[in-house]
Length: 187
Image (cartoon, rainbow, N blue to C red; front, side, top):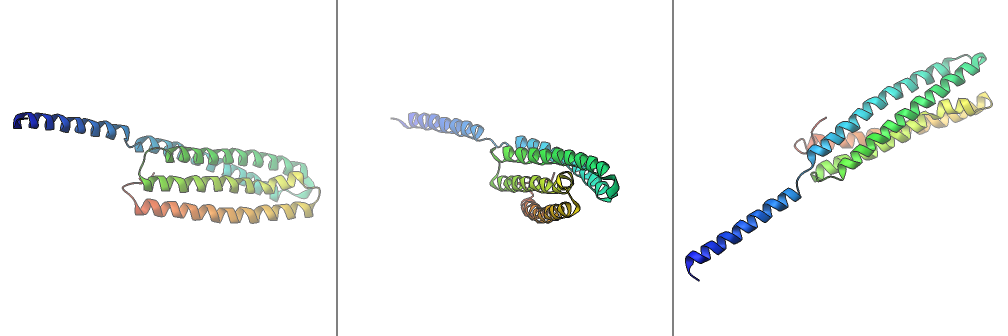
């Protein structure tokens, strides 16, 4: 072969490799935009869930302050609080699901790690909300004051432990975001 043929064969091979590289790059494209959209949807669920938690807490506080002579009213408030907590729990699970879905996309390893921690955090927060529901549920289920106090105290202790665990996960995610601002955008 002459040098001109060698150059055109080498050029064709190079062009073929370049095309293959472009196709592979397209196939392995980054899905960060899609992941960010899911994170935004998860954050919207979180904001909605916070409203339900606040409503549940308000109703639980009114329930606790209701005089024992008005037990029927207190139980009505308890049922309303449980409904609010149920809605909040669903929103926490929805957020965890969005973060989980985003973590399965083609994104940077640090972003995946961050999303995995957020999944754990919001699954833990769903458990926390379930525990918060324990106090009004105790009033609904209890036959006497001692039984209510015992069950409410158990629920409160569990909620405190779960709150700390969720806050620790949040701190871990915040640190990942702070340490990797180029990979994990603050939302």
